[in-house]
Image (cartoon, rainbow, N blue to C red; front, top):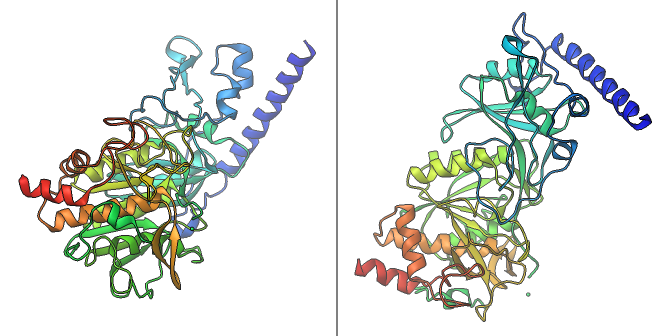
Length: 466
């Protein structure tokens, strides 16, 4: 009984604090970060404060504190609907309950577990209005509008709300659930580049690349990565357009982006997979980290710039907004290639590689063995060299390791196929690469190698045969 009373008193204190914060935030203007529009909530709007889960459990059915406090681990489970907000793979989201009875019943949004790492004080939403509407929503719910921009891929405004108080992300997502102005409400998930420590270039030989004939001329390839060293001899005059999705953050990291772009488009002292491509480079990572909001901006830019292939050598958790953006990009005919992940055989699925239609690439070594730290799973499509391969880095060349670099090799191979006249539809190209791959591991497709090792000669001959 003493413990029960203590929990009730603590919950009442939290409710009072939230109510005081709501009153203070409703009477003060909401500031939009980054120069966004400032606005107050419309006159007469009510500030809603939901009952803490602790009290909800004491006085009626609830979803449990654990679902609110602990992010769930995503894993090898059925994929969720890309339009659903929150929730991890394989999780069952309880239906909303109601408070009150009859005509006065009010829906109470469930609090949902969140899979994967996310920015702890931010949420992302989409809405049909502009920044003024986003600012009004932020003011009503005691949030800060940190950015708002239109997304061509999503067809809506993407708003990034900051949480200025102690409310958990899951709690805020539940609060926003019933607002009819919002279409999607998701965490701002964190993504990481997929590079491992490495120690010649066997890579092109293993995939049967005819280096003398290789070309990606007149094919547009976008790389979403760190900044790159445009002055590197392998990349001088190779970059058509550059976009900075992190304009307020100083550039310190150029290594990973230089290697990825060099493997695809390099020429001169280091000849990449598809020299001559129209290279579109989007800086979206610093210190190996990015977020859903930043990646959405980079992917939007790449598609609007006419990218036919987008290389995404990074991994994060499943996110409904990024899933929708990838799906819509592929619907426009854009081929998406992604790293499978370097988190080990028992790791959860890596996204965006695990999204349907995205070509998921794992890494192999000079002996065609899968990289020990590579992710495994039914979403793996292809294997390509990615262990100790030679690549450009700022100031010279080095050996690099990771599924990131295997993905870049596949992106370059696809550019060659498109240059040679292959049908550029994503599914057609993916099917061609998978059916011409060299089977590795157990006979037939498996969760380690996918359909096998990329074989550029066989793919080119398969194109000719068609």
